[in-house]
Length: 290
Ligand code: OGA
Ligand code: MN
Image 1 (cartoon, rainbow, N blue to C red):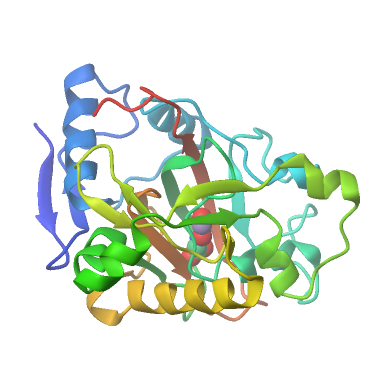
Image 2: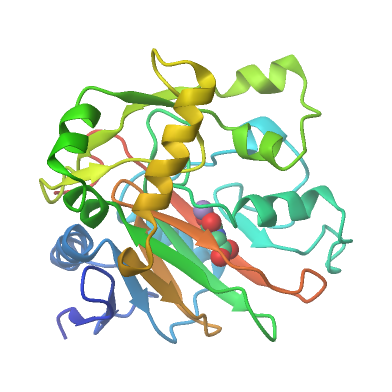
């Protein structure tokens, strides 16, 4: 059966079905998924439980995987394969982590609007997140459409933004959350990445307002003025009409394009278990068939 698509929002995001994600995909199926990603930017697959190996295999169909922030943290991890990111509040022992643990810092940072790994070059293309255990309330994930956000800018803003660039830094969100105990070596491990504020999404040719909380500076501007501007732009880009909210069921897999969307987790009771697993595909030239 070919890929089936059911739109979930007037602007972007769709439910995908018709393919078995636990089986190796052929080139035509991969092309169908890439085409749908280029159009919808967020695809939701319902009720397809994936083992870790199956998630890795499915993800690798789209390009090389990246480990992101693990380059800096180099901490022991609960999941054996370093290409699987443990999006959970569970510590090494398997218990729910104490409220003030370092593990929870990542959960909280994920509750700020961001594009995964925009602090790196190459950055992330797709992320693929699979739900394993959900809490009794909260913990939705919201996505905002940066192409629609660009389209809604005034003509004056489009002109002003067309030549501006922003610097994105890996530890910026941690520092915002009061966690600044990093060594110089850790700070240097991932040098800041610079991206134009207006970018062209390769797979659709549409313009994107590329913002998110990893951005900490507008190049050539005073820091304070740049940060206020970046926060205004992010507020513009995440207005309700641009947002699709995913309410997780266990067994859901959601994939999104980090070059055309930002996302954030929503609050839940941090003492209740929430477990998801993420893989991240690197935006290497030619890695994704456009
Ligand atoms: C992520 C992320 C948000 C969430 O996995 O990249 O930001 O809802 N997750 O857990
Ligand atoms: Mn994320």
